[in-house]
Length: 126
Picture 1 (cartoon, helix red, strand yellow):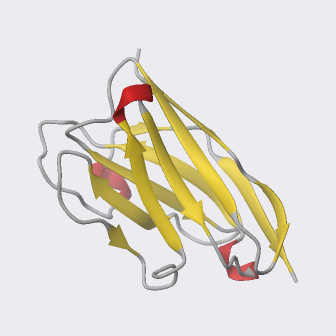
Picture 2 (cartoon, rainbow, N blue to C red; picture 1 turned 120 degrees about the vertical axis):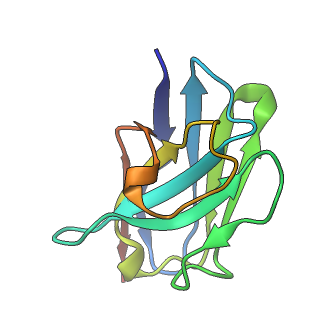
């Protein structure tokens, strides 16, 4: 059974950094759209960054451009999100998501993704 497991969340002060990891089991992360979403309390889940791991450029939400970097390591079936210069507005639950490999493109809508992790909490304080 396909599983995505996130790790790396925590509490940091504004300006700090965290690196989130998403370990996939049951399949590789290569040649499919992988994404990081986040959900703040009382808000809808939003795409933070997406990457088609078969090649192509990444997408970043305007709010994280220049601060976050999405990357992959296919040898260990892992997706990463490097988060620098963190702000209190970055606080939320971060989820890893995978789209079925049939689709050779990325989307930012939650309905485009069939597999989700359980989430990892990121809290940024002043």
